[in-house]
Image (tube, one colour):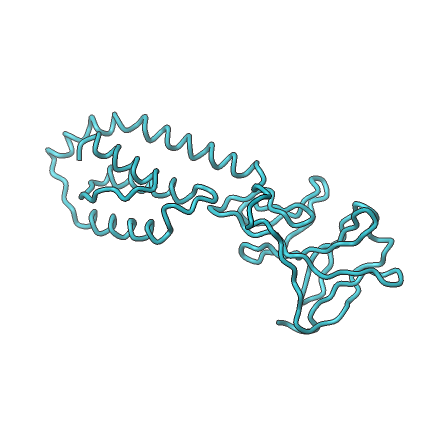
Length: 230
């Protein structure tokens, strides 16, 4: 394929269009793989679908398997490689910019994906997680009941609680007091103390942390939790 055709193929991938099929050499295959990964890594972008990308990877693998490249073709490819260096560099720079913005900018709160749910066990009981004076206004207190762990905090005198389990792969969160956020050990994922996503390195933002039923009774803070594994 000539340089213009390859650029058009890559551009179609990045724009979510279905490109015309062709039999690529190793260099062209590398360019196409980069375009696939860039397109798949755009946060919150549902087009093209993952099914389309998987199909494309499979088709690409079939096309490049056992495909000999003659010495004449290799000599002719040299100018194409030179022409595409700028395009590849720009694509890589764009990927870095997207990733940096993705990591540093909170997911818009108007997204329905950011509406937290509430964990309500079918059966359970109110269980003490802290004494009232251990959670001052603005304070955050971790707890672990064995079957449920999370964090309670006090806001304007009222207690609230969120799950302490990351909604991506179930990692246990820890409270980063210096930055006032809940941190996950994986994928640079972090949440606000009320459960909203702050940062992550995932193609799609994880869901916010679900809330837990919590109350304050006779100097103790209690969370409604199951009495056994669910």
